[in-house]
Image (cartoon, rainbow, N blue to C red; front, side, top):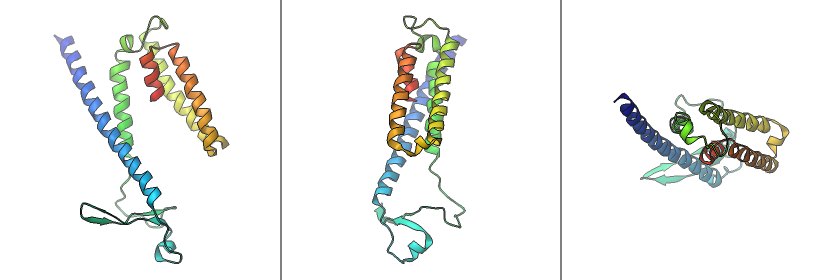
Amino acid sequence: MDAYLLAYGADWLNLLLRWLHLITGIAWIGASFYFVWLDNSLRPPQPGSDLEKKGVAGELWAVHGGGFYNPQKYMVAPPQLPEKLHWFKWEAYWTWLSGFSLLSIAYYCNASVMMIDRSVADIAPWQAVGIGIGTLVAGWLVYDTLCKLPLGRRDGWLGIVMYVFIVAVAYALSKWLSGRAAYIHVAR
């Protein structure tokens, strides 16, 4: 009976995490699209205007729901920030946290089923989990290091190097893990 309740609870947790991940992902992507649109729509202030003197790089007038909005972009933080500053970070944090939690529940807790393909490699579940987590950590370290090098200031070359790195990681993981586990770890 306890095993049944545990499996039933795990299924509900999996479902709730999937919905949380989907909803926060939509919020994160939506906010990202909005700011890309906003950056592309900003107009520089008139030369000599008060906005230019305040350090405003661009502004926009918009209307939504009957209200008028006037967002302004500063290239450098102004000398005085307001006490209440909205920071668009929680969408990304919750998407990552819910995704990693879902990965843990769906893959790491069921590694023998979800991560191992005996026709690919005969490894133990703890090894598969170690490869998965190690891939996530190593991927972040490689990307972070490359971005801090002079290469990080050359977007085109960085993109090419990262593409080659991702293809190599995908190939290597396909030799150790099941196809599904390999590609979910590359996509993370």
